[in-house]
Image (cartoon, rainbow, N blue to C red; front, top):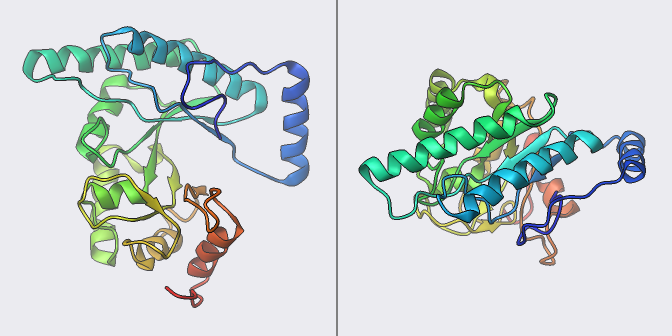
Length: 257
């Protein structure tokens, strides 16, 4: 969920009474784990004001996460602007410094969670994510894998061999102990399109085996799964999409798949 509007820099403001009521409801409804998703404006590599605002916002958001018992914030790191060579290195080093500062200034029980990118932005490749994890060197830096983004970026996890190859590589480079959760989304676009357009489960181009593999493999089945889909009525994630995922997990027939 968003801690504030995802299209503004307004920091989350959570009073103690609200935080207490939220925690009570989460416990009563047996919901969890809870995560924030950072605003779309974030760019931790920016050398302009956007970079400083991104850092300040994430410090505030992780502090808010601790108040309500959320595990942390899922973030798209941003992009390197018109940069190559030494200039790109400068932006990269600035991003690493900001991530370290965010983690140093926020509660120990929270996590900053990098989401893989579908497009030519930071985090498109597993190698780049691994480099960031290595250079930050903090156990509170975690990873979220989005199935639509993997598909768009050219990572095939549809057949069992490709699935195993991908997660063997992930474990070698990152490793798997850093993997915090899965964003379970179908895609409107073809494999390797570099386009980030989510689709309802079963209505897109992924194929059910992507989700079946994730649910049936011990390395990933234990993880939280969150759907970020348009929804059958265009109103976002809904019971129908969750039901479709449950059917795949149970190896049941999926209507119209």
